[in-house]
Length: 359
Image 1 (cartoon, helix red, strand yellow):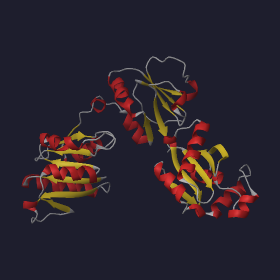
Image 2 (cartoon, rainbow, N blue to C red):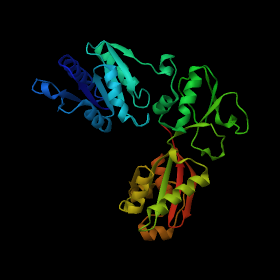
Image 3 (cartoon, rainbow, N blue to C red):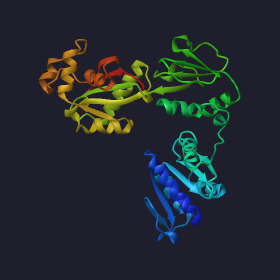
């Protein structure tokens, strides 16, 4: 985590220097110590950045640049400085406050998704201080649903339901979690884990429902929460000078046809001769998906080993391999993956989808 450590007094500066050093030594964080300009000539270890501007201006910059902000100052000051820059809990940085004596470390903002709670516990341990965490689930020793998602690499949909699910957890209401995949995680007694095959969209449940699946939400009741594993891998073949719109439409059509969610797609893959195909690159960027380009040798090896994959002599004559999208999807997803959509043509684009592991 990239962390700014901010001090405002000489006593706070000494603690800030120690804080930055301890966090950097863990190897998990890169810290920059922000020093008031009047103390900038003091000998200070580690990377530092003097500041002379008002704190309200400094905080505006820190909120944009850093994943975490540790403030050696009063909590009230930090709240007033942070308020104008708050956007959303999914993007706000972790903000942690430490008193000048180093007795208390307080998780002030973005406790779960931003990582402030975890950072608070870690820093309190390093400083031998008291960690102060006030989020209801943590106080009650319960896992917040968004933290379950973060720890397991899932995407939450719709995010608006997080507050309601966590409220139900804290108030001892039953939650039914249906999963398509084997899970090895500890869950509180309020959450009853069931196999996905037991779920029926038409059955009325006596509690909220969470589905761990890559299936589209289209055919499920409103108010259902989905935890999306990133276990879909899309292989793409395309004609020269294909547009980004053609690629996007092909991917969306393939997902619609298979009943799968875009948020479960981990990556796009194609052959290396398409690495400069701007339409493909732009489509991947617009969909916020990484794109991988595989060598002809890798693709030929898969085609030779897997006789069940599509093979075209015409494609081989044109680019040197007998197929692209299916072997590309398989290579990205791994040998144990399953091809849930074989090569399918959408105009000038061919698409294949493989389902692989989610961890």
